[in-house]
Image (cartoon, rainbow, N blue to C red; front, side):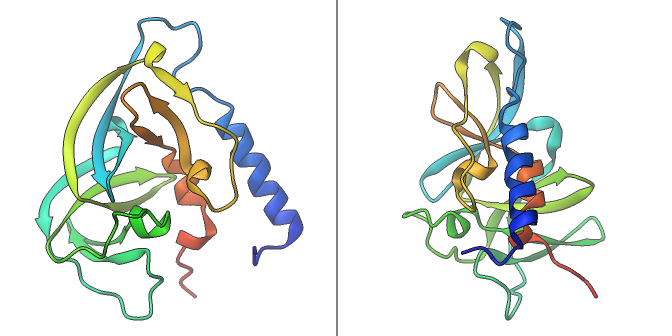
Amino acid sequence: MSALFPEAERRILEERARTLSQPLVRAGDAGETTEILVFTRGGDRFGVEAVRVAEALPPASLTPLPGARPFLAGAIQHRGRILGVFDLGRLLALPGAASAASPVRVVVVQALGMTFGLQADEVSGVVRVDARDVAAAGAATSGGRQAWLRATTADMVSILDLDALARDPRLTVNEE
């Protein structure tokens, strides 16, 4: 169950519904394409808009964070900053997402003024996706995969909504 107040939970769900109702590429833009970086985690293929990717790092060792939630895989130093690295496999309870041995691949992304890492088993590269080959995601579900899913490609790549992921209160670290 949610630890949020009912009003806050309703506001978050309404915001997610508005976000998910927006297509990745506007309807009617036949032939328009979007570039996405594709990576795998736990046997599933994910994509993020390439313009939101700061860098795909070579295998690196993560610094463990004692007491952190299980889906916070650790931290890395990236260009003079310390970044949290999230494990989508553990966050979404993917069956093939065992704890990764060090070193791991990290996709560094930016959303809502934040920079963070996503753990990847493999980075496939950047692909161009035609608007006609993208299906809008289903309705948002609280705390589940759909909450961060913007669309799915014809090749079954789940395109993540990084803004929704960054807004998830479970991923927020409050420094007080």
